Image (tube, rainbow, N blue to C red; front, side):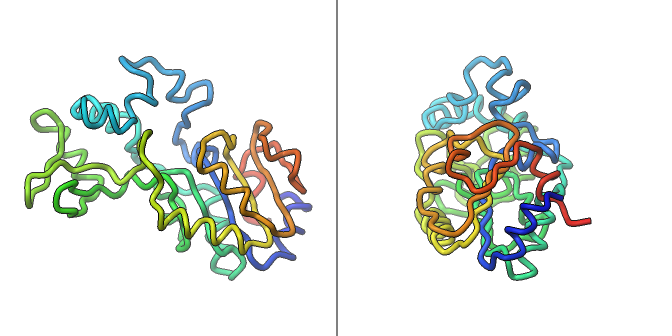
Length: 241
């Protein structure tokens, strides 16, 4: 617990949390840019290539081999930060969570107002008829044929409901996130290096009273923040003792 952070939380009525991969690493989910992250692992292609729309279209089977191995997570549980944010929402103080993560851990912790900027690995849909499938469907496809999942209704290609490189953000999700940030009186930014755009640009819509940045490493927003904490997000935002 950080007393100064708790003071900001106590006096705020419309908190919005903006988070990135650092929120999930404490649940055992690796990020992209850390020493042991995906960008530092050896693959036939760079991760940003393998997670691009072009690669998905042109090398679908290889995309799914990488996707199943590296992006589908098993056994991860919400950590102290996820749980605290859900508790703040139940208390009527946290009005929204805007996340760049695709693991669904905020919802697993109990948060309801969650804007998933980059989608979720838990949802998958047929690109032809739109039927949705759970993550298990993607895993089952990996045990048959070339590993490419096809719709059981129309035979269309099933795609994860995640935003790949070269794809735009969902306009409804983006609008909801922008509106939430605009109305916030306290914006807590946590576990993100703020280098991924357009997501990082959403901070420009904040006009509230306090900006708090919690990240192990410095970020571009540190200079204009009212409080900067270079520490693990779970340690900073964990439930009060």
